[in-house]
Every structure is written in structure tokens, then in C-alpha cells.
Image (cartoon, rainbow, N blue to C red; front, side, top):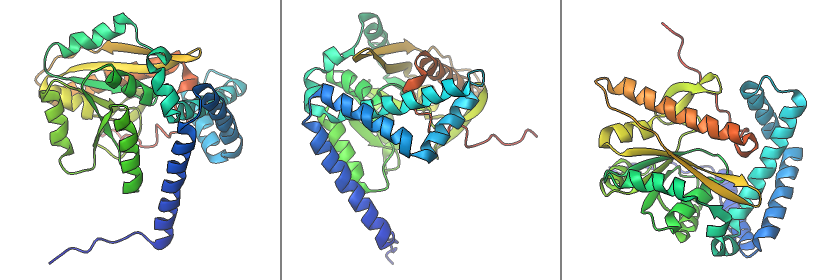
Length: 308
């Protein structure tokens, strides 16, 4: 007997369709803009969002108060405003596809010392678990590495609208970035195949999401952190590299570092230690440029169970 799939209410389907059309139209409009003009528009959009999106602004200020209790209210307010501005710029830069792709190598500086980190990790032949966060411009990070000829895939979360998921997937594929949608059938096997083939597998682990997680320190508080990166490395023997694409002047710079790990007799303890080490690197990157992180995300939403 066939199982009936419950469809969302009509109003929700209509909202999703309108959102899809809006995103598609925005990509078409911004995609043809010169990069400088797109960046200027993005900065203005970010400032406007900070002014009118009161709920998101309050979330950002609350997160900043937890991360930087030593700073004044005025300093945290300025950081929040700068974060909205940066995110607007980053989104419009990525959206200006034609102009951005023509100057990607100049826009995103990748020093030899950082490239050698990735080359050495790949040379071991077991693939690379590449860990980053929503720091700087993570879309340009993946695009720059892929366009340089490195075989890579990224683990991504599907949107609630399959049409929008497909649109995002096509947009990334145009830059050579292949996506493994984590909720789809066969995703785990695809991750293992990528590493077995010696490819780079990218993951963002700096958000509190509905995935298997471990509680590790983040700005002095325990935060639920996705454990997939550590589990994949421990299972396959892959090298682990952290990397970030952070704004410098009118462009960006890639930073990369290999995180050494060694498997012991307690797999759970090993996963916890490696996840903590990765979270520590993400925090360091955020501290390097705190205005370049998504402070409106509720990073400490899930609380650890009470100690027994």
C-alpha cells in the first residue's frame, strides 16, 4: 500500500514559491552587476537590515554579549552593525557571479604557504576533511579552491523548498563546487566515497543545528557542535584541515592550517577532542575579525544535559 506524503498548506507552498522567484530574480539582477557596485549595494542592504530587522539585531547583540562581556554596549552595537554590513557585502559579491569569477584569483588571495598546507594533506592519499565556519565569505572559499583545480565537494543543508535547493546547487556547480545534500538518501556513502577517492570534503561546523553534535567550548561556553568532521576523519584516516576566507581591504585572503590528530582506544573521547580543537580554530578566526561572523545565529541555543 502506497504511503501518502502530506503536502504543506497552500499558504506555505505559495510563500515558498514566491521566495524561490525572489531569489531567482535577485541572482539574475545582481549577477550582471560590476563587483564594486554589487559590494556597495550589499553594504547598504546590510545597514538597512540592521535598522529594520529588530529580531535579528537583538539576537546578534545577545550573542555578542555572551562572547565579549568585557566590551561596552556601544562597542558590541558597532560590531553587530559591522557584521550585518559585511554579510550584505559578502552575499552581493557572491551574487555578482560574472564579474566576480573574472577576477576571483585577484579578489581572493591564496598565499603559497597556505596552499602547501592543503597540498601536503592531500598527498597522503586519504582525502581531506576540510572544516570551516560561517566566517568571512565561505562561498568564495569553496569556489576559489575548486576553481584552482582541487577535487572537492561540500556538505550542505537542503532548504525547505526543493526548487530553491536545486537553484543553489546549480549556482555552486557553475563555480565547480559540488554539493552533497546531507538529508538525501546515500549522502553518507557519498561522503565516504569522496574521501576514498582522495578528494576534499568541506563541512561548516559552527552552528547549532539538528545533527549529531558534541558539546565543546566556544567563547567560554559549551556549545552543541556538529561531530561529523571528527567522525569522518577517525573512520577514514583522512587529514583534517581548517580554512577561512576572510576580508582584507577590497578583497579576501585564504588561511589554512592542518589539525593533527591521533586515534586512541576511546573513539568517543577522540571525537570530542578533535571537535574541540576544530571549534577552537573557528573561534580564533572569529576573534581575528569578529565583524565577519553571523552573530544573529543562536549558537548556544541547545544546552548540555545536567551533570549526573
